[in-house]
Amino acid sequence: MSRWTPKQLDFMKETIRLARRGLGLVSPNPLVGAVVTKKNRLIAQGWHQGPGQPHAEAMALLEAGKKAQGADLYVNLEPCAHYGQTPPCVEAIVKAGIKKVYYAINDPNPVAAGGAAILEAAGVEVDRGLMAAEAWELNQFFLKWATTGRPFVILKTAASLDGKIATRLGDSRWITDKPARNFGHIIRAGVDAILIGRNTAYKDDPELSARPWGKRKMHRQPWRVVLDPHLKLPLTLKLFNPDFGGPTVVACADEADPLTQDNLKAMGHQVWPIAKNANGLLSLTDLMTKLGKANIQSVLIEPGATLAFSALVAEPVVDLGHIFLAPIFLGGRDAPSMVDGLGLESISQAQGANILKIGRKGPDIHLIIRPSGGFAPDPPALGS
Image (cartoon, rainbow, N blue to C red; front, side, top):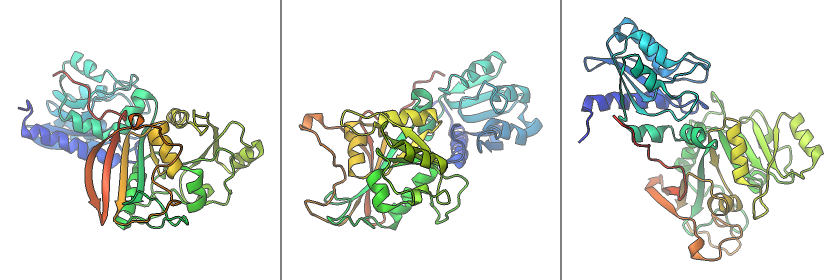
């Protein structure tokens, strides 16, 4: 039996609903919502809208004004205890006269953590753990980045029922129907970066922009990252056009042509030399480490067959996968499969995955998977 009342659960659900408004806006900060309540009534609310903007708690307390005296505060993440672009939330909470704070999960960032202890020392009652699992899942991007230094990685791919991602002549538009493609744009809108391989960039010439509502302009476009070991991609591709999307990063081998590197940099793009893995391909682990250091918390991989092999099998980096299967058959020995590459020698070497959900997007089957070794979805135990 839950030690929290239905009303308390409703208040925390509201903080999570408010926090989601910041999706795609707040990185590298976490998604946070807050509500102020008194006598089981919601009297104020707030949510973090972006770096440098007031935190959720500060917004809610400002709206509450004098009514915050003796009230309760609900927030999905432990209130911060440090001076950054904004003052510590714990100071505002104590000054406002809040009686009790309910929060869902601890802040894993050592710079910002410790707010709960400060509140308790100031005489504010603290209740930890309310809807911890939901709050943990909400901030998976931030939590993985804060605890490992690497981004949360999502992989999205589509294939026919026989596992083909294109015909033997390379025709792949469109394997899935519009609902599945629209869902892909919704994912794009919420991540910090999109990663593709050289072959996908050359054959499809994608913009790599997020257009979840059919609009080209958004508040912020994700970074566009392409693997191009020897810098052979034409500079006329949409990937290199600043009018279509966010900043472009070209990941290449150490020995890539210096003149082409200079040309890309002169166009305003970033060029990152990346180490090679055991298969002689650019190391995704090295790339993710570099992206994490650049404050990229989430990456969407839209792979071709070779990149899918690297990300799922040879050098597993994927935390969550969205796989769409269209109700068609393509056949063909020469038609590319969903996962290609060198392949494994025995079943015992296979990389496992947990199937989290099976659903539909229009006529297409939608599988949501968590590969073995992906970032754990369960929050740490919190004491009361």
